[in-house]
Length: 182
Image (cartoon, rainbow, N blue to C red; front, side, top):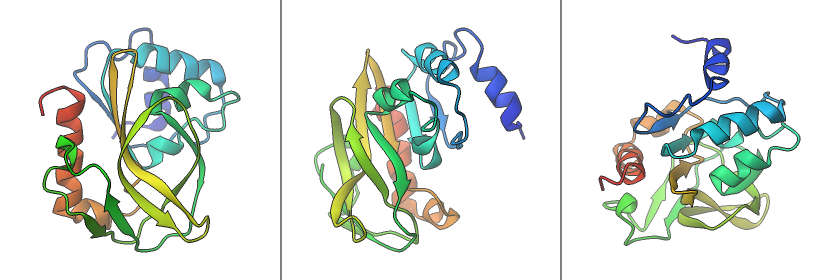
């Protein structure tokens, strides 16, 4: 297992992403507050597709400013609602990532990330209604920035969702979409 310190050092390297077909981010760097690190990390990610799972969406958010990360993802989320089961609505039935995904799906216990601001044009794929905010929030989306494809989902706080075939199919499709093989 790679330590977070080792990962952090790796991501500080010049051109760290250039030898990868896609980078899947399924780790949280929520306590990283160095804006220069975030700017460098994102700059060196450009050109390499990304898949962001759960805590990756909340990574780097306390770096002031965290604008490069928000721009890369396509949105800003600083907090989430309480954990619960919730209904996910497929809002992109014809998108290849959502192939085989039902119109509605009840998730295992997870979190709805509160979206404060859009940064660029995202394509929402699935959304959920947050009873605490009394608003719908995107739960899965795509974003393209500087010819870099990004697929993101805020689901994945608890292991139960990873045991759901429907969720894993969506992650697989997201990876394939990001590398333009779907």
